[in-house]
Amino acid sequence: MIEAVIFTALKGLVSNRCYPSTFPQKDDGTLATRLPAIRYTVVSVSPVLDVCGTDDGSTDDTQVQLDLIAASHPEALTLRDQVIAALQDTDPPCAREGGFVTFDEETRTHRVVIDYVFSPSSEVTS
Image (cartoon, rainbow, N blue to C red; front, top):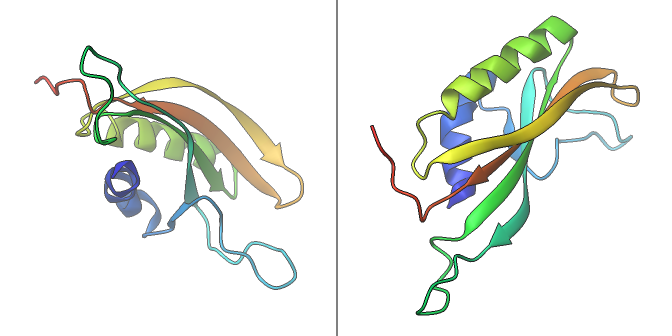
């Protein structure tokens, strides 16, 4: 469920180059995708505990790591800002938990990592 929310919110920023868990690679291990691109990975899932126990998973808090890659540092930072804006009004709501900016020597890309926690048990307020 959360993966569909992320893809829908972010795909337009990168011409649908928004991938679960991995970036497409060629047989030689190099990136097969054009830039910029986004990878989203579920890092952890935490059930919401209450007096009734836990439910079917639909209200689990889900931590997701987003990896944004671009050809240049300014492009990566611009994409970061666009992603933050795009995820501000998601349903379920999410909160940014942190992240960092780096250069990936192996893929020769500039990378921004952002962690989010999606909280379906919380209400969306306007």
